[in-house]
Length: 144
Image (cartoon, rainbow, N blue to C red; front, side, top):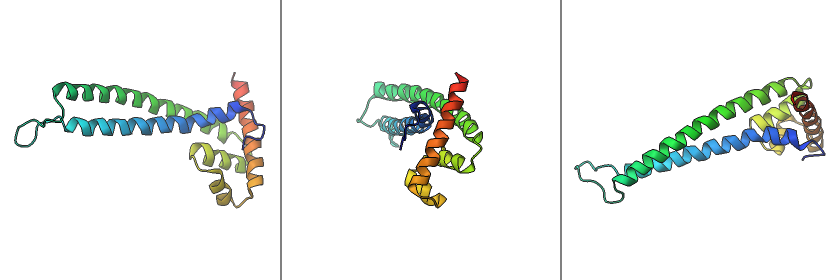
């Protein structure tokens, strides 16, 4: 549904969902490594489990620490992107254009769900999306 709109605006706004996915992936990695590290801990009877040895536990802890650092960086990036995008979207004068972009890029909803939610046709949605993206492209061009 690009409709000739500058790729810059679409690429810019899609960063929000890309960073959100990266955060989810890192959280899942941490969860998997934490589960693996539990397998290296002593059992209740004091005998270590034979699944992994101490160096593997150290490796898990090191990787968890590294990924948590990356996760914090991604969370900051997401917040910065969100706030900047939200400010640009809030500057659009047309309420329906704001709703389309908020629902699509801030909340990550599919197009069909948005136009059904708004009670408009898909072609009206496409027109609102296209004109809103053009305005976001203009805002981005002014910032450069």
